[in-house]
Image (cartoon, rainbow, N blue to C red):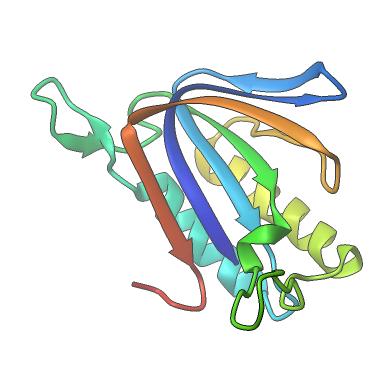
Length: 150
């Protein structure tokens, strides 16, 4: 699994020009799932997300995690995170999981994240054409890959 995590002061998802979900301070997470992903990938990523200390304390230092600021999370599926541009100019998405594999993993990811956060997670709609608006706070943007744990 690959994630783009953006610290936001607000974010929302619209589908067909209608507001689908929105959050205030917290994380907008874009998630790309590949066929080889398992519960181990979900567990590692969810642990990292809720433990990540990237919110500012009173001195402006990144010392607080998302629970300490009572932040929200918005998760949006994005198969393009597994794009390969190795050959030619048209990306290949061969590593991205097909919906029959990706949807159950996406749902398990959200369920596990809700358990760790202790409240509901807002989401986009898997496979939909979505418009995402956000205000990146910082800006702070991180990339996590469960197959390359740096």
